[in-house]
Every structure is written in C-alpha cells, then in structure tokens.
Image (cartoon, rainbow over all chains, first blue to last red; front, side, top):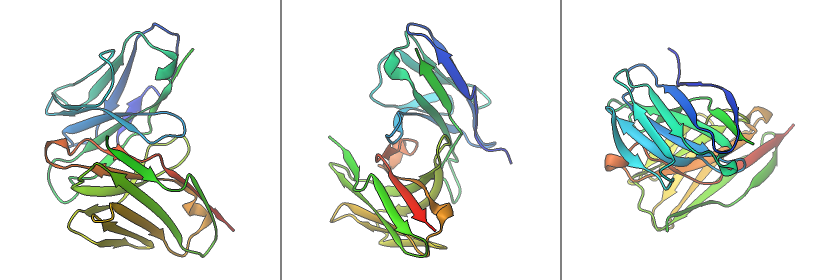
Amino acid sequence: DAGVTQSPTHLIKTRGQHVTLRCSPISGHKSVSWYQQVLGQGPQFIFQYYEKEERGRGNFPDRFSARQFPNYSSELNVNALLLGDSALYLCASRATGGKSYNEQFFGPGTRLTVL
Amino acid sequence: SQKIEQNSEALNIQEGKTATLTCNYTNYSPAYLQWYRQDPGRGPVFLLLIRENEKEKRKERLKVTFDTTLKQSLFHITASQPADSATYLCALNAGGTSYGKLTFGQGTILTVHP
C-alpha cells in the first residue's frame, strides 16, 4: 500500500508569492492534518480536516488556508509568503476507526524556501 | 500556555547501551502520548503510543513509560545500534475531537556510536 504522498518535494518562492502544497492520504484514511516544521524544532500543527470539514486550526495567520476534497486529498495554501514561512510542511493522515486510529502517518514533506 | 520539553537536545551513547529520552509537559491533560522517529529530511515515523491510564508499553527493543502525576514520559531503546541514530519526537494529544492535532516537543537527536 502506498503511504502518504506529498507534492512537490521542494519549492522555491519569493516573498509575497502564493504557494499550494498537495497531499494524498493513505487509502481509506479520511482525516488529514498539516504541520509546519522549522529547522531544529518539532512539527507545529496548522490544520486538521475530516470528511472535508475543518476540525481544528493551530495558531497560524489567515494567510494559511486549506481544504479537503471528496477523495480525501488535501491542499494547503499560503498567501503573501514571508521569509519566516520557509520550513518543511508535513501532511499526516489518520484512520478514524480500528485498532490504530490514534496513529498519524506522515508524508515525506514539502521543503519550502522563501527568498 | 501548554509546554512540552524534551530534556536533551542531543544524546550520545555507545552501541549496546540503553538510551533513555525524557519528555515533560505542563498545562496539559493529554489523553495519550506518542513517540516518533524522524530521519533528516524525512517525515516522522510513528513508534509507540501510550494512553493516560497506562503506565508502560513495550515494542521489541522500545519501552515507554507515562507518569501523569509527574507529567513525564520516558522512552527507552535497549541494546542500541548505530541504525537507531535519529531525532526522536514526543507528541501529546488531548483526544476527543482533536485526535488529528498533535503537539510536539522539539526533539532529541540521538547518536549511537559503534
């Protein structure tokens, strides 16, 4: 079975631009969460989506938005990029039933560099 | 505010020894606690989960303890190997509707020397 996939792998943008990051969860997983990981720190929660609805939001500005599609894939959008948005963006999917429903499975991440 | 601290930024041990990593938290009532392994440039990989009503969990060479009175978890790797070298992350979850939200510590970089 394929794990969580994310695209693109790497991205370089300039300040003020907009970026869209994409995530495909593990087949059968309906919950997707997004995290930002700055170098040397642990991941920080941005959004959680379940059944296409936002179920949680971390302490991030309105420049960050996300959505989940009927096939449970998800997009994270960031507007008006700042230098401080440079980070590894991680997507995680989670089963919502069964024995391992508390475990989150992370994708490889998208490395965003803002110049 | 909620705070999670992993007491060591870096831990160096000799192969064959037991590595012990610490996770402390404040202003939090987690339903469960998880440990993840992260290699450079990769996403975290789930290792173990322990619930608030459990004291200890084991999986092969890994052991986790959870003390909700001390607000502390210990993560042990016995008979450590150079392949265990990685960053280890502690994460808490409040449960309920926030199952998809994990709050992470900053990580401990473990290096196992041959």
